[in-house]
Structures are given as C-alpha cells and as structure tokens.
Amino acid sequence: MNETLELYYYPECPFCQRVLRAIDELGVAGRIELKNIHADDEALQTLIAVGGKRQVPCLFIDGKPLYESGDIVNWLQGAAL
Image (cartoon, rainbow, N blue to C red):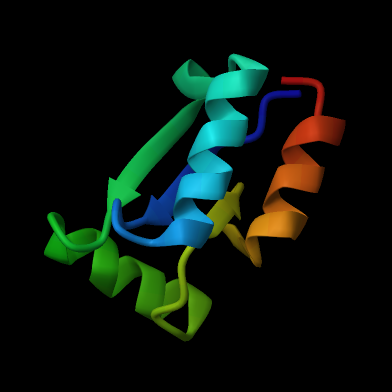
C-alpha cells in the first residue's frame, strides 16, 4: 500500500503514546510522518481545518482523518505497510 500517512499527536498524550508504541513495534516509523501539534502550529491548524477538531491522536490516511488510538492501532496492524 502506498497511502500517505501523517500522525497528528503530542508527546504527553497517553493515547498518542499507545499509537507511537504500536508504530515502533510494527517497524513502520519511516512510513508515517509525525506532526506534533504542540511544537508545530501549522500542523495544529491543519488538524483543525481538515479534521474539524483538535482531537489527537489522529492518523491522516491520504488526507482522511482516523481518530481513536484503538482504531488507529487496528488499522496499522491490518495495513500492508
């Protein structure tokens, strides 16, 4: 699969940490661009503009938002990255 993947997160968020751990365990860190909304105001504005809310973690899959850490982890586990 060749989806464009961007994870919007912030380091202190426990749900974000769950997704980051899964990314690490699955060995797909190089496939997903990380966007820290606390360090990157443009990323925060994009998250709100595209996703409609400030909620993290949010994985953009080809520009479409996927929320909830469990759903993101399940998607990552099932994706052929």
